[in-house]
Image 1 (cartoon, one colour):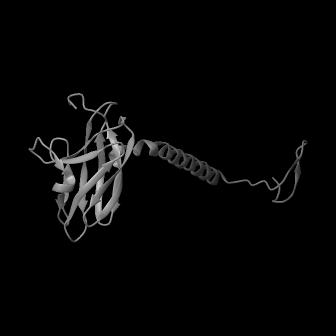
Image 2 (tube, rainbow, N blue to C red):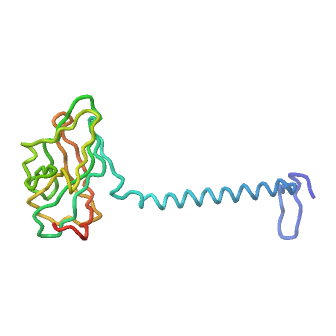
Image 3 (cartoon, rainbow, N blue to C red):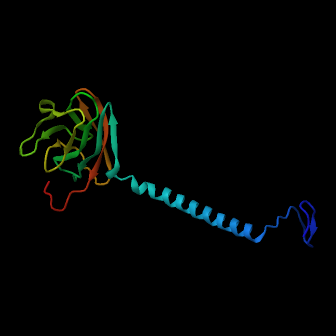
Length: 187
């Protein structure tokens, strides 16, 4: 063994700065390398999975004290006249607010359907009041929005640009996720 910095000839070239570690230190270095490889692999796996986590199930929009969780519309094949929209709207403000309008790219009008009603009314006339701290759940089998006059198809697992207009919070840009048509649903 040579001292650090002393070159040692081995026939082909010169070896410089050879470090000889005691057995327990070499073992610790090997374990540290394995841990580093495992951590890097886990990070790579996580980064590869992130796009899978960014589905329509997880999106949320916040604006001026209003939070909209998972706004979605039902898929609509070409030629469909209408689609429904749902999601959860929470008023995080200190005063009541009202949803007074909405739009969806490719739709001509929007109506509000209230639970138990088989006829919609224009959202601009009806409005949907949300008290401070309250959450309103829009669902296809309860209160929901119905976009009519569709001029395009809405393909599942995509997003469609839209807006929600509140009396106090103002206009909020929303990307509506397009959910598949359930097999038992008649559109």
